[in-house]
Length: 161
Ligand SMILES: Cc1cc2nc3c(=O)[nH]c(=O)nc-3n(C[C@H](O)[C@H](O)[C@H](O)COP(=O)(O)O)c2cc1C
Image (cartoon, rainbow, N blue to C red; front, top):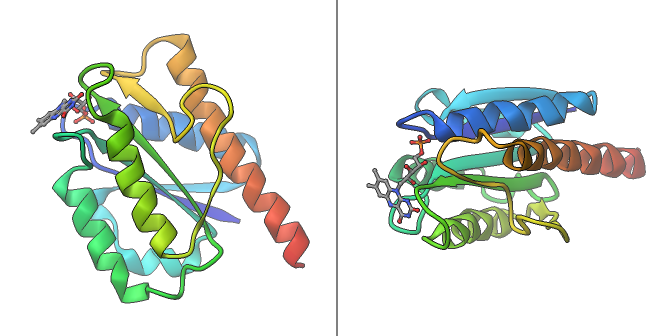
């Protein structure tokens, strides 16, 4: 069982979130492959059970590199049905576009037919960090998101077998 975590990051905030999320994934015994978007290749999507995309918030949207990765993923449109998806973002402020950026990523993953689990407590659409994820609550949210997605993959794999 493998999860691909693809992130963009200019000043390191989203990158730190990616590592926390991968920590959560691995806590559940699932392999986490982390790729900076510049080094990511959509071909890898065929060989993983889930994709978690992370982006800085740029004008309330994901970065252009994350959008390009999504556009490139059209190469495998129809082949990603039933895989697990998730998103996380880092913003400069609070109530400044984080949720719209998250939803924009999730919309694309839904169009691929991916399965997305929300959260009933805190950061409903995916982890958000205002700046660097230094405080305990934000760090825990990232780790928990990784755990939840890995746990869902394990559950669905068990059902499919
Ligand atoms: C071009 C640009 C646009 C941005 N737009 C927003 C925005 O709309 N809302 C916001 O909260 N932060 C915005 N920011 C701030 C970044 O989202 C924030 O600094 C983020 O933590 C950077 O993540 P990184 O360290 O992974 O690059 C913007 C930054 C840049 C460079």
